[in-house]
Length: 282
Image 1 (tube, rainbow, N blue to C red):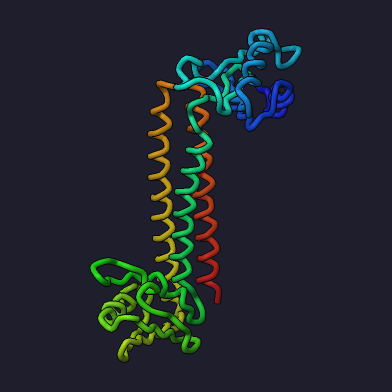
Image 2: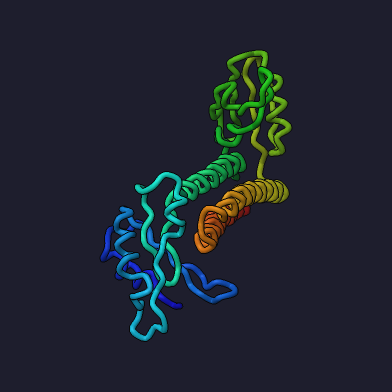
């Protein structure tokens, strides 16, 4: 019941190249432990099952031999062999063919990475110190019937340490761009001249710093909500696999999703901690 990933790797690598070994938590009711062993070639999994199932004891003092089988019935794999499934061990099943769990995890991780990228851009616009284009790059402007970023309607340059110059490419959007900058909540002052907008960056008082920290926290909380939405969608998809895969496989995938969410939410917390320190440093 307490077999390790290394022990399983040692045993199952005898029959072919492994791509992954996962040892799960004990079942809440039976207390049994399951593991999933993924082979590069299906034939390796078949060899492992033939030799080990009901025969091999993971340790000499083990009460019973391990059970090794496909995580799915081979008649229900939707089109036969090929793919990366393999033999299982430690009282559980093998990697389930027909279910691209690695692909799904990669997709969910990609969605959360996009959330982190968006948060990074938002944080770049909340900055203590001198004027930089990043302060206003992502300000939302209503133009041409759509909402676009300020950097998409004009060029943004540094005039001096406390002033930015925004030169709009179309005179028709100057007023809307100026209004968007003035109303973005960061306390900028604006003045217009033809197609140019001068943006004054305010002095950072303690109240202004607190306002920036509050804004950053709001962005980080929204990022966490977005990640929870990815988790909800992922869990719904995983639970939908119960009819075609084993209970242990579904439980393992649920655990992997939880780890992924925990990792990315932790990234948000670290980004917020760093931003807080940046904004409150005097």
